[in-house]
Length: 276
Image (cartoon, rainbow, N blue to C red; front, side, top):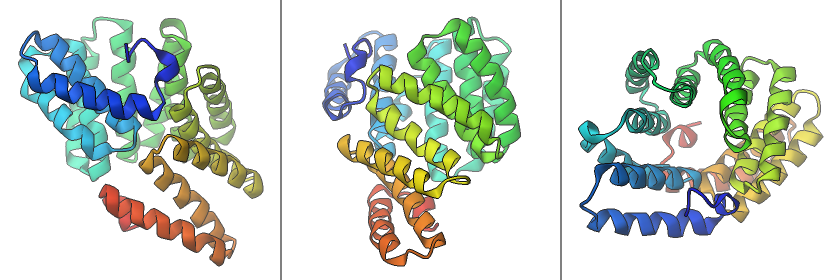
């Protein structure tokens, strides 16, 4: 139900109740490994969607413990999820190893859908390792292939990741086209979590030319992140707003946002944010 009912994908109920249900199911289920792998994958994704990244770790570890029983798709999904955990921990060595494994899997990907998922995971890892140009080049391949293969919901997710990498190489015109299309898809599908995250990216696209507009976009993103109680997303947006205010010497406005951000970083054990 959770994977098929798109209208509820971004609600707090889906994230919290869904993850709790899956945890209880996994604690008692001793049947087919494919179903166990699917449940672990979905529970990990729900945790990450909710901004509770560390909460995804036991589900990902369980996938690795049953590695031999995973399908080809289950294996590259496990690597993708673990890569997100490694990126959060700033474990660059593990990320590099994951990228090498995925590059090998890409050569034998049995379907276009597998190829898209693997390429997207490689892009995410390359970005985390600072190889943004490579990530953008692969991103163009992914978007071109995805337009022929996947539905608009998944296309929106892929466009958002590509837009973020494009902002990192200052390709703002291309980034804006990608992120605006991605935002439109999120609004069409009522994907509030996706919309909140994509507005965060869009604020960074707008900032160099219109700081007032960028703040407005980030405030909208912050409101959506608060609505769904995504603490990691709240942390990210508060950082952008606070740093922008510091740069504009609006210290009284920046201070409460940066204090809240620090509290969230400590609560979430976000080492990178704590020391930023």
